Length: 357
Image 1 (cartoon, helix red, strand yellow):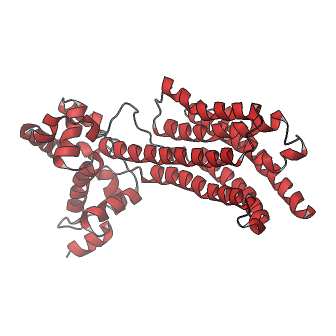
Image 2: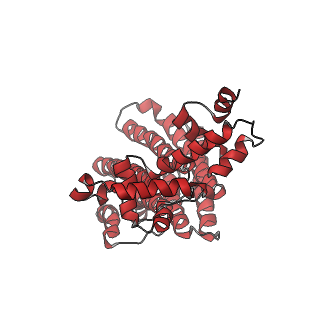
Image 3: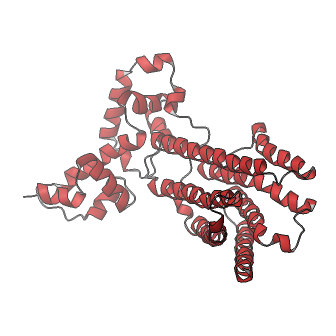
């Protein structure tokens, strides 16, 4: 038993120290994403405090007010995590008065700590509910981010979205260990408590390192969107839902064919609207609602059609698939292959082989 407690304490110290070390680095490194780093660093610091529970009782009496205050700070962990996602998805994120509400659970926990009732099982259950409510909010942010991105940008964001979902999903998976550990305290799977505590500590260390290394070494994953942009369904009026401007549609199709703006790998709905001298809102409704395609898919359809023509020229083209994807406006082989297969059902290489005699 003594060896188990010693191991747990040592691993708790390592986990907390790792989180604090990476948090200090995030706070000092120079980057354009300073606000995101601050929220992530805050999340790591609060996580370190939470992990200190494995050994904190050796330094501070569990009955002391300081110990209770540290536990109350756990209610700031998920707000920091949630705000991190917001600032990653929306680089021009601005604080609003409503964001003060994120402090409310912490303030309640703080009051309970002062009166010495923070240790109750009801408060622990409230902490888990608090966590899952924020995770729902995080996934809703990601869903909205993906919709707005596809309605306004033509670059592939699958890597960014995959990373963000991995980040949220891994956190959700890790918390199941914490919940299981909590249940074991109340007599459910009590014999599994030692293994669960060790599992929580080891998994937390690995997750913290993975989170931070990905955030630091892959900043290109984060393709943010303008926080002022709205989903098309939020822009539509009753007139917009029913009236389809055929003249505007003809103008758009003519422009896409003659000017080929899709060659621009960084084409956005705003850029295209300026070229057409129309409002971004009207163009967004025209493409995303009346044509029935996200801007992302609308632009890629033109790119794929041109790529198909180049791939099957009468005289075999000297252009490689890589040359072709850059020529038509893609910026990576994976996004080109995914889009091509989505539109044709086969890969570019297979299409060329099947259509060149």
